[in-house]
Length: 441
Image 1: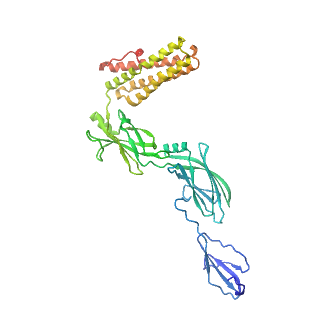
Image 2: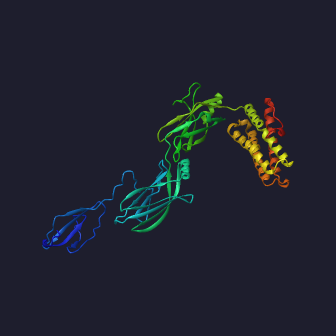
Image 3: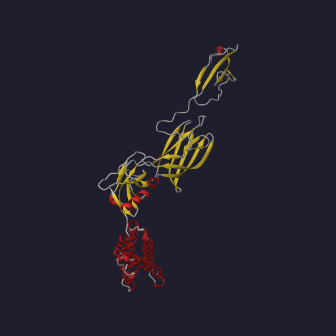
C-alpha cells in the first residue's frame, strides 16, 4: 500500500468501519487516531480512481493486567493525584510488619508516573518510597513499619497513619495528604487461659488470656463462661452461658479481661451460693477455641468480707509503724532527709500501693457493706497520697515549716469514720474491731 506505483492518493483510518472518517493525504508522514486501550484501528488505501483496498487492522495495546500478588489501586479506598496517579488509602499489614500500598498509573498518553510516599505517625516520618510506573502499570509498595508502630497496631487492631503523596505525571505535579488505614493481621489461635490467673470477686472474674503469635498480630475474639456441674471439666453446648466479654489486644502478651455474670449467672449464683464455670474463647478468623480449667464464683457474706478486710488491715499495719519510726529518726537527726525518703518509698509506699491493688481485685463488698467499702478504699488512697507528699517534702529538705501534716490528718479523719462503720456492722456478728489509732492505714 505504500508503493509509489500503486496510484494511492490517500488513506482512511477509523475505529468503526461503518464510519470511515477523514481522508489522510498519501504524503502525510503520520496521523493521530483517537482510540481507547484495547480498541482496533482500521486502515485502507484510496487510489486515483476512488477504488479502496481491504481494511488492514491494528490493535491498540490494552492496559496491562495486574500481576498476581499485586493489588490495583481502584475502588472506594483510592486517591488520585496529579490526574493520572492513584494510591490505595487502606492496607492490611502482613506478619513481617510491612504495609502494602497499591499504586497505579492510569495515563492514556503513554507518559510515566513518578510517585513518592511518606508515612508519618504522630508527626514522625516512619517510612518512605519512590516509584516510577509506566502508563497503565500497577504496583504494590511494601513499607516497613517501626516496632513501636507495630506494637500500637497489634494492641488496637486498626491504626490510621498520615500518608503524604507527591506525584509527577503528564498532567503536572501534585501533593496530597490523606489517612492510610492499617489493619493488623489476626492471631490464629489462643495459647492459654491459665486457671492460676483467674480470680473471682462477687459477680466478676479477672482472667488472663494469651493469644499465639507476636506483634504485629492482633488478638481478638469473644470469651464466654459456661456453668458446668461438679465433676465435669469441659463445657457442652447445652450448658448455660452465664457471662460474655470481648478480648482485644496484642498477640503474644498477657491480656487481662474482666468478665461479669449476666442475669442468668447472677440468678444461679444467688440460688446456689456458688457457681462452677469454664471459660472458652474462640478466634472468628480460624474457628480455633481454647477453654480454661473450671473455677468457682462464690457469694460474699458480710461476716466473711469483714474478716478479710480486717485481716488485710492487720497484715499491713507494720508499714504504718515503719513510717512513724522513720520520721521520728529523721526529726532526731539520726538519718538524713534523703535516706528517710528512700526508706519510706521502699517499705511504706510500696506496701500501701500493693494493698490498694489487692482491695480492688479481691475485696468486692456485699451490698450491705458498700459504704464501708467506700471508706476503706478512700482511707488507703489518701494514705498513698500522704506518703507521696511526705517523700517529696523530705527530698526538698524536710523543713518543719512545710511538712504536709494536713494530708495525714485527712487520713486520720477518714480512718475514724471507717472504724465507726466497721464496729457498727461487726458488733452484732461478734467480730472485734481495733481502735483507729492501732490499725493501718
